[in-house]
Image 1: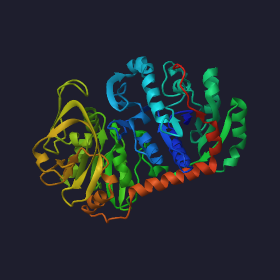
Image 2: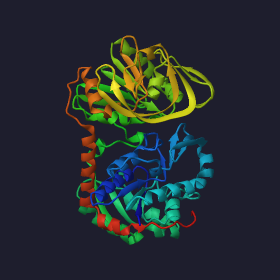
Image 3: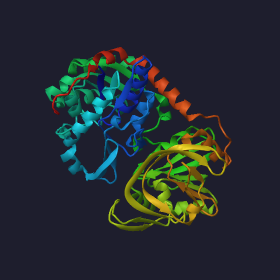
Image 4: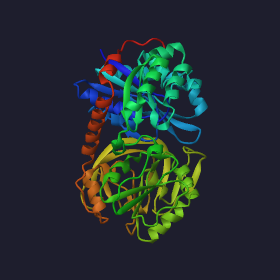
Amino acid sequence: MAKSIMIQGAGSNVGKSMIVAGLCRAFVRRGLKVLPFKPQNMSNNAAVTMDGGEIGRAQALQARACNVLPHTDMNPVLLKPETETGAQVVVQGRRMATLKARDYGKMKADLMPRVLESFHRLCAHADLVLVEGAGSPAEVNLRAGDIANMGFARAANVPVLLTGDIDRGGVLAQLVGTHVLLDPEDNALIKGFLINKFRGDASLFDEGLQIAVDQTGWHSLGVLPWFKDARKLPAEDAADIGGGGNGAFKIAVPKLSRIANFDDLDPLKLEPGVTVVMVEPGQRMPADADLILIPGTKSTIGDLAFLREQGWDADLLSHVERGKQVLGICGGYQILGQMINDPDGIEGPAGQVQGLGLLDITTVMTPEKRLAEVAGHDLGNGAGVSGYEIHIGQTTGPDCKRPWLEIDGRQEGASSPDGLVRGCYVHGLFIADEFRRGYLESMGVAPSDLVFDDVINATLDALADHIEAHLDVEMIWMLAADVSDPPSAA
């Protein structure tokens, strides 16, 4: 019989995803079959799964920590924000609808059976299922119909550990305030707490730990110091994206308002000859950039308008006039074209929008989403390529007759006549070491011996070591409960 325990947060971005990933690796190293689960996630950074769907990138990283392939059951409800008030709703890997927040709030309780179905399927194949909450259970105004935190924990009868973030300050208020706000039935499921992101001498917080225990009655699982190598692991939220590196070759990346699938940047930030600069809204593109990389976006037409609002369109034109390179991936590829047609109004009012015109291509938005893992090679140097596609829209035009990739036996991508501007639909290009080295070497960057997969695995091992050293992992195992048939959704 599988056991399960849920890691919830006393706030958003307290490090739940990272802690679950580290615990996954720690328990796997103890010989257990471990699987991750997050009932509901909100993220535009998605991963394509082994069964042809999509889930949050954080659950894909957690699956990797478990040494298994990602599956749609690991994140049965994924919300992908498209506007300030609406999001695409993906259920068990497939797009279900695009809804306003209020409309989703009315129907989310109806998704609980699908959530529990996925959870119990995972439990049938695991010794331990580690569950990650979303946001905070203290948002009791959202408790009715909840499927992300205590609503799920009650429905599945899974015990909860609460994570507090001391780096933000007020961690005792986070923990004790949550205890005060929750109703008795929800409180009864919280068995312990842990403190994350501590800097300095943890013994100075001994009195604080005791205060939290006295006020809540929960077990203290320990204080987890700041894990500096977290930057080497893929970020889940756009708010966490940062630049990196100190090499001479500068890559500038505009931080689009609906930036999506930005894991393309992770390997580049670790290359010793490269510096990646995230260009924030209101800033100009650095004039000394060697390459401007336009990333994916959940709303191509919306982010095209956003890009123009920042004046980045003029910066891009000046960059190309200086003979510098531009690369667009997925939505960034579509933005570079002459025209984007949306006859069915998938991204807003039906119509067409003029693109940046740096590639002679036209994109037509279509309802069907392409989700696929892909492999192929660089047509220029033969270097191997692997990655994934996750997009709507079909792109054609004269510059597509100058492809630069061959993917699954077909030609992919487009290039301008002078070769300065290129685009494609393949995410994860730079994760492939051979391709990344060849691409950078063609631009004058000395090749390195970076093996990105090895860095990720070594960092997950280091994270597990970090957790083992500072948290009571044995107590976490003891607090996990056997999974049984759940009562009715609470």
